[in-house]
Length: 278
Image 1 (cartoon, rainbow, N blue to C red):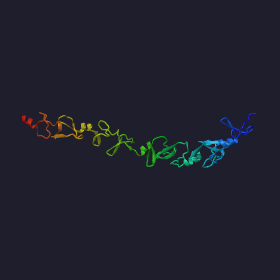
Image 2 (cartoon, rainbow, N blue to C red):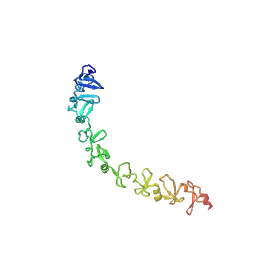
Image 3 (cartoon, rainbow, N blue to C red):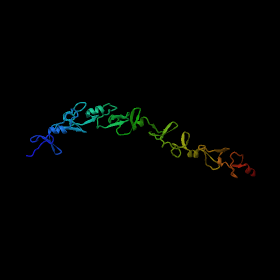
Image 4 (cartoon, rainbow, N blue to C red):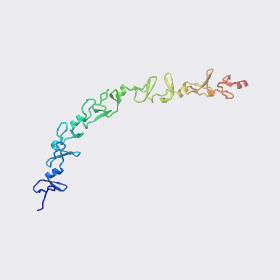
């Protein structure tokens, strides 16, 4: 009769319990001595008749697999690992999960939470300071350690544009101590935007240089175009008439009369040479 022995100790296995490992048979005693894992808690081998519970190359007897804080069994339950310690979800949450900045309670793993600058909230606890409604995934604006949804912030803090009466949330310009949207601050004449442009005013109304010149500036007798000092232009004034410096020339010979003597003949301005010829 062919022998059927333990591969290691050579004792017969006939009529005995044995274990196959990689097609090789072992008696239970040899198998446990050679291959059984040691329990992380009690350090004893985990025998053939005991369930071996494992997690990341660590092993436990079924009775030893317990929460490291409250000692409740973790068998068939959700658990978490922290610094080699196995914990039930309740203990893990209590010890390591974020605390809500509003209600101070634990934010349980898997629940929705809001985070901002190192603080955490339950989704239902992160409220607008003004309307007390959850902010959720909407935009918000922080102010003085409080948080506001955008509509409430605009109602309570934002300047109102004196042109369109709507809130100014970004940028804006100030004119005569009044706030304007950049796109609303326009020339009273042509409606061109004035933000970042040179402009002037008349009776507290803003004008671009072109409109102001066309409407209010004196006109040059020579070229009939507007004379404005806003752009640094120089001009000559004589008997309630004005000329650009470059236009103040002799009507006869066109020589410049700036800084020179001149004569008048009716409405004409003449140099002294041309005037004597007349």
